[in-house]
Length: 116
Figure (cartoon, rainbow, N blue to C red):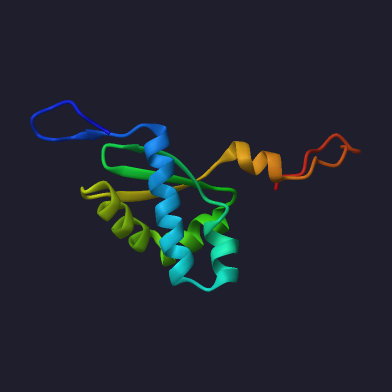
């Protein structure tokens, strides 16, 4: 963690962010039912921390909405404590992860593609 200005804005490396995310997950694991933790929190990945926004990725919109409505404020509270500054949490759907998890499309038979 480095401070580059007199206002004490800290810069965090990707390794720092992963350590913070692991600490947050550890606290959430202690606070939550095991099945809910494994379903909703374990698949999340910490992507970055920029401009006081901690960005997490999940594989689908349902997971994003579930975590956003039930855990976003708790994650922000924990992140603020670990990072010693106010933190907002943003949860996004990672297209790359979603495409890797999605089965291959069925071959087209009539020339029209099906819209998911």
